Image 1 (cartoon, rainbow, N blue to C red):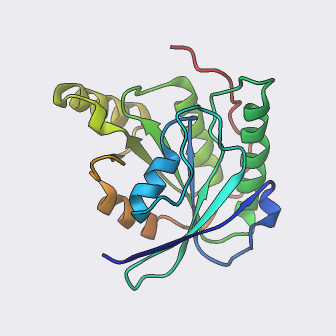
Image 2: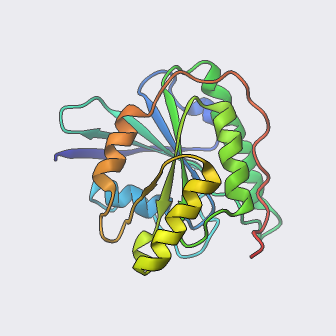
Length: 211
């Protein structure tokens, strides 16, 4: 499968994203859930910067991708939620940039969103809040469980059952390390963009996650 991918730009405000240029798929998730690593695994190159420290992505990062002879898609890497060390800067970045990005849903006819959750921590309060909110702002959304390679078989089975129960939807297990689920994820990205939902409530607040 031939994959073409390139970094387009980083923006501080969603108004800088070209309107209606390509179908868009936004990646939403807690800080350090593995969005950048997953992008790199999908495109088979080190395209997105990764870091072990949470809260590093504070811009909207745009990547143009094309699979095979298909049409280009814009992958949109949004700031992570759930981390607010440093005076709440990361929290503010998530709230402001995510709000401005999804406010475009009323004028962009081809937008979808993937909620990335850590398979090792199913059912976190903030992930459930993010899922409810995403369903109210975008018509086509899906849940992807990252880092499944870090779970033994028995724990993984239990985690995936719990995730499906919590989100009341199918959850796609993927691994940026082993490549599991990436072909299925590409298919999901290809069909995900859809007509938007006009309702735009405020996004979930980004506060430290208690465990």
